Image (cartoon, rainbow, N blue to C red; front, top):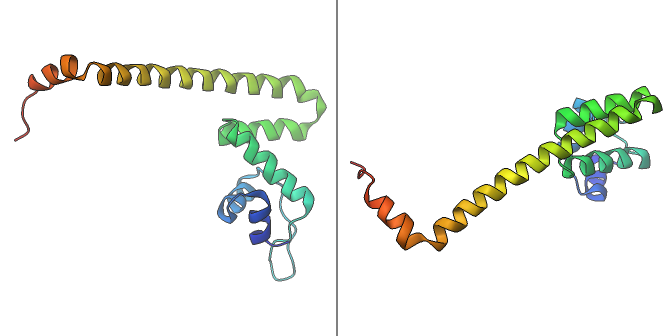
Length: 127
């Protein structure tokens, strides 16, 4: 199948598929004599896997590292698991930071008249 069909099948844009191939998140895709990519079912599985890992919060850099370990073999399973745990901790920290920001914003909204308006009056006017 061509890249347009692969894009529809995986719900990943053609540009993203090309990018994934260029940076090594998916193996090189077989090409026709004219240089047109011919995607196999295995290629689709790689695209879906990479997209799922990205949707799980892995950075491109972490996913590249993960796949490098994967290609080294089963002896890297502990290292791959550790990488995923590190990514989980990073995401939890980001969620915590966002929750604190959300809580601050909710406070400002709930106390707008008593908190925001008086503080805004203390601000210097723009000239």
